[in-house]
Length: 190
Image 1: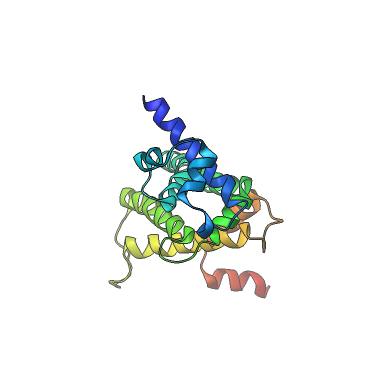
Image 2: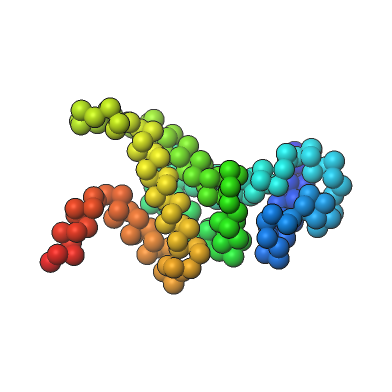
């Protein structure tokens, strides 16, 4: 039974992915998704509330679950690389996903997932900062890095940095994680 449930979700997810390559997200209806998937409308609602939930499920299944497994094993570089590799693999789909705006935008979905993922890691290792600043909380740190990661992924997938490999992106991102702006400025003064 569980296998059938998973297969139905995969069919619906693949249907939405295919439709997003042909139509703007806001033009895609539940009827279009179910017709493409070969399921009836009530079946859709047995698994998903709306098309935004399908989009979120696709991202979670396709990328986040695997990345989180690597993070759980403290394989952070590998997790980041997997995040970039998987987004690059389906760059056309994710480019279209980033075009979704508003409250349920893909950018917000991605940001929320990354924030939660970073919070889990910070909860494991968090030590209050040496700074006497009440703003330096693990929530602020997780939000800062989730927003930064989303913007880097978006810029890369949408084309401005498209010619760079996942390895290049992870190397740049890890440098940014480990160094401040002043380190970067010093590097280029020489």
